[in-house]
Length: 371
View (cartoon, rainbow, N blue to C red):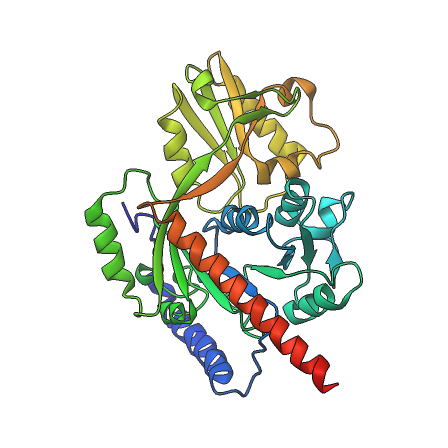
């Protein structure tokens, strides 16, 4: 049910109060104009969250890429978490994962025609994307995990909250996992409750809507995971999960909040056991031994299922034994909007982009005439 992963530490509430005062003051400085929040003529869409840990940002950004890239030149700008580089880096087809981070690398491999760049300073990143010769034809910029990066004011702010850990039920760090007060949700234009069970009931929709207590100008959506065909890491063969339903599965995950995926896989396979690591975890030889030992405990037939995000880090290992690689199946994870709201969601996204591109062209034409 919703909120079933909420676990707080009441002993840390005094520290959370201090942390909350700091984040409150920072937000007020932006609201009062003491700290500048810059807007851009180009359409900028931010996809982020308030909670530490995964809320499904990457699948939702990939959803937006698939929606927009057939009509517009799209760029994704990320911080590049845990990358071994600094400053602005524009990803190329051969850029190593260590230079840009696992999620940007994954997106660049899947969407070769989309610009993917990383920079902790989002303003500088946007300036590079819009002025550098290699990327100046960009028409839409998607900001990955930038809800707290208030130095940029997106034209469309999308806030994600996990069905299993709603922001209105959580506490501030370090007692809970909120980066800022749940009141920060008021900056969002659209709120998406992610990782919902596919069979969520109408009553749960209503309860969650009341718990989030959104403003009239905000639009609420619900999404669930959509799984693609599995791909064998060694052979490249593809199959549906239903074709392996009689197998015993070891679910290998280094992602934030993997509960919903685990629950979904339990409905598809004979038995499912999980080996979980922290989000963005880089696998070591010790982890490989744990993986081998866990697999040996499963009766035949068995296989390993992992995510696209995890396999990028598995492939960075120097020696991945062939007998293990043949048992690893990569499961693509996408999203699907519930309540038949995909058309409404898509219309709001494309409508914003088209309107702001038109306004940008008009402003540019006026500037040229003045010149």
